[in-house]
Image (tube, rainbow, N blue to C red; front, side):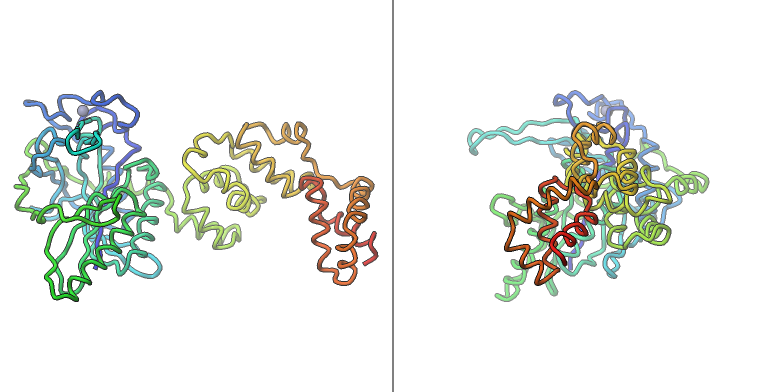
Length: 466
Ligand SMILES: [Zn+2]
């Protein structure tokens, strides 16, 4: 059995969970994005960020969770250098359901994964380890992250294998991005711990996993380790293990704490938060269209193939581009252009940030294609240039000359050249007309994709007499 605890940062918020420091701590000098509240100075009081409650509730709703009538906050006490208050403010269902959501479910490939609980909590600071050996080891503390808003999602142990875990995390990551609450591509924005157990064995928690890729490996490793212990008749200890990403193994770190070890107490500085129906309804109404609903709409309204609609709807960057670029007449072509020609040009976070492409570029290009002024292959070349420079489609057409060649005499000259160079292929085409595509390809190569494919084909056939 495999269960997950996933921490998601609400990276799109302005301020931290209980003070006015920036939620986006990235890019600051160490220990400059701090104040007496997030440093836990005596006499300071936390003030709950209402937007964090709103965004976390949206996540709970999107994961089909029940929302509570009131929210409660608790102190989880433990001493660690990254935690200046010596306690973390988090949530717990100690007096009935008071966490942001519970009893949700998500379906992945026909398998239902139940969500046990969703809670809001603050992220601790960051410890940075420096030094090359044990003797010169230094630990630096940066509190810029301390107090930033997190949502913790706890699943039931419903996963059968590591592959399901990976699919679930991809779905969750797309969902968070689509809701506009988090940017999961930011380093550390989504972190997961796994609880792994095999039949008849105790539960082992694996922490400190840096990436989803490693998470899959860590689960694999644990399943193998536990099975081998069981086969040798050794009891599997209930413990917390750390993932060592250099050696690719899990290492026992401490016996597992129980809830009692944290001495949870109600956070008396934050009153119960009543979740009134009007706010809940308002937030629900403001939620962006879900990925599945977008996909359905793309298929039913525009007859976009399901596979294309899938790619388009699950990536917020692509679906936003599509929504702004398309109209009734060109939806299918725009969808195609995004999911085939554009995809490789903007497949990473960095490329997307640097890209100069605007939605209008796409609609202009499709218009040029539909009116026969450029070939598909030229449009692809133009896209490359647009992403790089942001120049308008008409500027690019005139500056690098991408206009389609449909002039028969111009094409005829090129075809004559190729006929004289490719006598074997010409002979083959005469015997087996299918192979003429090779020759048409040669014309495309020579014209950098600008030759009109239909005119070229017909002209070629005429010239070699097939
Ligand atoms: Zn602060």
